[in-house]
Image 1 (cartoon, rainbow over the protein chains, first blue to last red):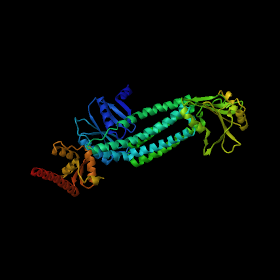
Image 2 (image 1 turned 180 degrees about the vertical axis):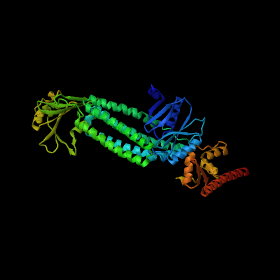
Image 3 (image 1 turned 60 degrees about the vertical axis):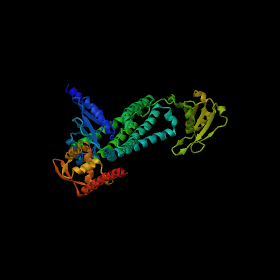
Image 4 (image 1 turned 120 degrees about the vertical axis):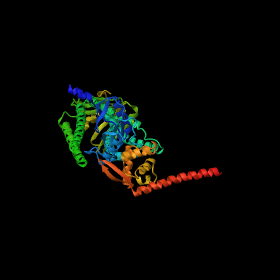
Length: 426
Length: 107
């Protein structure tokens, strides 16, 4: 019963505010107070509210550029700022990073910031302290991951085009990188616009678009993530789906441990420098442990894709392309049939198949004359090092691209013996 | 950048320096400016905090006491000179306007 009461007395919110968007925070806290929820504790990721009598109060966010989330106590400057504000009726209710949040119960109180030029200057200094460097690091990391995913896609587009798992992962990487970059770009645009407005005697502007993008980023990422897991599980890769779930769980656990450790060290009065050092070391150790554990899962677990009878054809497809692949017992060959459903993608996909690259080695090919003898529109013999060893055969029939590989002689006989396309149902 | 900005004082800067010709603390400065200007100029706590920090760094003002975390400041010689220059500039502006008006009347 007590627990229920406890629950009813408090309410939690995921913090999704942009550090420089003071206006959104002020309005939101005022709205919450009017509904009877007063901000109780501000953490970087989670904001706690306590039940109170609904009231019309004013909130204000100002900035202390020298503050850090790792400080055990407010810095001298933060303290001086809080004292100045207290004398004007503004009571500090919390802070995150350099943002300092105050509440005033008086009617029509004097605002904390009365000079927009100074407000902008202080925000600029504060953003330079940690928000901009952290975002730049994150963007670099995202760009690196996106680049790896896009490189893989460009090398073998059919793989991703024929799988919703692949398509979703590819677009997720691009969209996530764009969204993270949008935050930083949004800040600079907001700053430039505000600078212009302030120079003309106005106030800082409202970062409406980036605020909206930021607000929808997390729900969109969660929906995307769930969709990717479902697609992976649905496409015969339950191991991969489990891997992603474990990865996300591990990541959330890491964030929680780091946050709790930071708060604990702060409560014990550990200095900013030592707290940052512990944070970084713990972060590296946990990241290493997580990668090791996940690698062990991949190596010892069920594997990323489910075991399947190779003679049973596997079909994967989307609205853009479809792949059917497997092995034949007679003749003993491996095959992959690709159907590009989007005509505008055909030439590019076919070119990628014909000019495949294996690491740094370029595949070579030569077309066979009179392919109609063997029932195809075109036939290509492909090899890597020298022509004595055929890497694969590519047969083109209507909208289908058929790849065949196996023992040199068997594969060649399968192609030149005719009837292989019929056998594959084309 | 700060030194460059201080070549011309903004209204809040001007009144803060005016209020610091005698020892004064944060809230005292805010109140004095409001009273002096009849509420026309109001300096918020955050703005005052930033400006005092900048002035202190530029040695335009100095801290003279701190009692129960209440810091008291006073203008320095350098600050007084800056303020005098600003007052001189403002007087010149008024004088120029006066000359212009007389000129118009003489036409």
